[in-house]
Image (cartoon, rainbow, N blue to C red; front, top):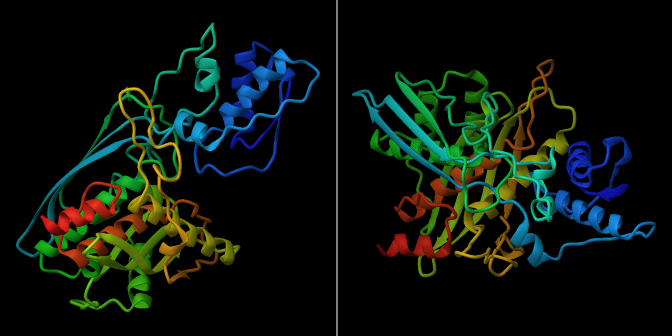
Length: 389
């Protein structure tokens, strides 16, 4: 059996398909070909399994299988649902005295490795059981990725509540739990800065000892032209956010300017300024592209994207029911400033910008409207309802 596929992992998918066909792995070959990217786990493994089953039924004939848009939207695995709950207190000096963070989430990976991860294998007459979901261990983590803040607090408590069962099929999506956890932490840091009557950038620096983290915060703020008590034009707001991906990969800070139309609730990112430290830089253009792409992708997640479903099926099956960022909403400019660290270890940067971008946009919307939104995505309706409340 030979399968050409755009799977992210030819060897795990090979293992799963071989088990599904009850063939020895040595008799199954997967050849990678370019196809649509997935930033995690999409339908590529499943459509490869479909092709293998059809090819077995029609031997010695080439078989090509392509899921259409509605099929992939309805049947691929989705990014897991997450809920976070935060509580903190400030001391007399405006520093965080107690920090409590709890996150509820499913597993963040059901990738192939055995047949039960393949959709077709789950629906065969002799079905393969879906493997039991498992949490991914720290320090990288899954639902708790980036749940532990890089900041220094006098007292801190972080709890990950693992939820094994979900009504929808879920698996890996780019950044895993870091996207939602950084959004939550950095949104809350802005709220606490407001309670402390402190500038959001200064408030973060007040709680951060990591020198390289401080450097990216200061660089992003400087290049953005950040000033305490700055007043944007009417209907606009400024936002800031920071994180070190997985607390062991690249550092990233992002400052944003957002415009909100109060009559409709429409929010648009006008400009973003990012600073990134990924250790010694080999390909600055590639690193810049990663951060620019992260900001664009995160903007789409944060303002538009949400899977909808009812008691029987997925209902977001096309680009109308599952909207994404369109060209008329692309920012006017994105500037990326790289802090090169010659001689320092290379740090992963492919997913460092998604969390800070989301929180930066959310903080800018709160600055523009005076209303704090905590449920993603920050759609027009949710923003409009908050403004009118």
